[in-house]
Amino acid sequence: MKKGDIFKLDEKYRSKYRKNFYKHPFVYWEAEDSDCRAIMLTTSNKPEFNNIELKKEYFKSGYEIEFGKSTENPKSYIAPLYLLKDIKLEHLEFKGELSNEGIEFISSIFSKLKYTDWGTYSKKTKH
Image (tube, rainbow, N blue to C red; front, side, top):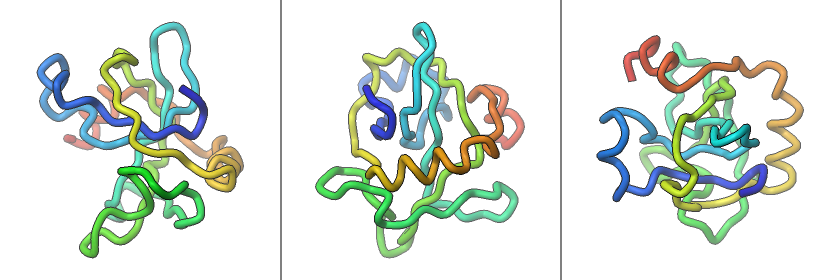
C-alpha cells in the first residue's frame, strides 16, 4: 500500500463489519500499527458535508475507480476528514490510484482535514 492508492472493502468480508461501515472507497494515506488512515471518496456534493471537489487529473485512468462514477454522479469529492479506519488491510481490494497531482492536491489541503475515526463520523452523520 502506498499513499494515493484507492481501496474499498472486499465484499466477501462485509459481514465482519457493521452494516453501514466502509461503503465508500478511500484514498490510503498512511498506516499506524494495524490501523489504516485514509481519506474517503464520494460522489455526493450535499452541502451539509462540505465535501471537497476533485479534478479528473487527480486520478490515474485504467482502474475501476476513476473520476466520477456515472452520468448521474459525474464528479468525485473527498470528505473533509482524515479518517482512522479500523479495518484489516487484508480485507481491502485495490481499486485505483491518484495521480501525483492528486496526491499533491490532498497534501496541500491536508492540514484542513478533520481527524476522526469512522465510528464517530458515522454516528455524527447517521451513515
